[in-house]
Length: 612
Image (cartoon, rainbow, N blue to C red; front, side):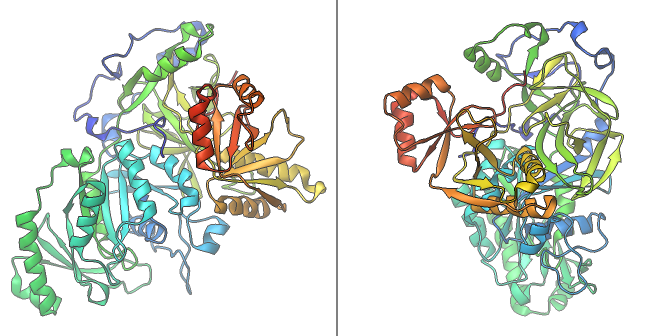
């Protein structure tokens, strides 16, 4: 189950006009704003105005693409880049002949297996807008990385295989998007292959998700008879011919529905022509009108049909998304007055603070952003470490100083250089705005879910928790001579969140390391990256446990339960922050202990603690 403690978007609350930039939007029960003592804050952050220009906010759009594996997600991303002008020729997930590889799948293992392993950011300008695309892994073993990427998104595109309809991973990711309040656009892909009836697909979505769809691009045929689409917004038919150059743009012929003779001749299939006329009439009579307020609220989804592989309908979708997609949305965050920094807060007080959230609009005068992903070795020659930061409000300016949500209030970090991202390609930038995703060199203190901010109050967006792992294994270095490289690789991969790490209680690093993952493929990725990026081998020894629970009650509670014999058959370990974690062999045992020993305060996820 997706935890509720992560950042959420509220697109329906996006302001149509610019609010005052001197204050946040508040929940009714939020406390009065407090003011900090200037001596603890970098003076420059008090006098600089980091507000972003309204025109730059309004031209930002970002989207995350979600799907079940093999629905064509990475191919769709490539074609959006092609039609967005970011690529001259789209790449192929599985390359043939002279085809180039994809921009978003750049890891060796991604190229070898033809799957996405890590979420990737692609930024480009299209017409007057600046687009950020987050290509997410489809495989369930990497769902945690997808979950983090969705934290940075304002819009979601649900990509379906038109022959299969809704699939298990699509269902899981849809629920995450719904929890975050993301507007949902639906694209039914692979219409160049035999497909389900469009009506069946619409019925599936409405029946299973309770989500009403509004067809914008309606298909004309499928498989080898797929001719093109009807754009219902313009009442124009777009008939496609395959691109002359593999990976190039498709040739398109546009014919208005009013020109029946020309349309019938161009389709050159009497059955398809009659079916098109019939479908148009049915849709006009039976489908409720498109209401953008309902789309923003997640009650209605614009529906598109096409084929990313053959480039049919991709540019039409991109153009409609640019018109309909929401601009950067406000987000809830907590704010803490620096005057209380010396007081030791109780656990209950900390819980209260987390609940006292205020809405930060993109027009807010201070810079705020959160880390949703970290990545090592984008440039293996330099062993770099990047933090991917989604900007929520204000503007990034080269050389600015920022606070860090888990560091001491007076601690400031200098953001000397930011990078715009395009897969594993990077380019330095001097300024960035709300909705943008930038890469910042990670000094080692920044973890997934951390907030960076300017101004005289500590700001913290709700963290992005680590999921409960379901696979556990000891990892060992078989070659003592490569100890340093092995340890460096493990440390950097753990910092990325590729897997989680556990140790025996009171083990300060000398004992065996336990890797914890959501799925088996994560272990394989770690071993492959250790070999490819750090030149070291590794051995894995699986452990027979199936889930983990963090004991928020602390070590005293764990010791009490253990002394009373309540933890028989349960492995007691610690995470990297030396907090107690219990490993269980089955769900029944975990549920039983949680119910009977409530003082353990078992939790299926965790967040990084504050930095002392």
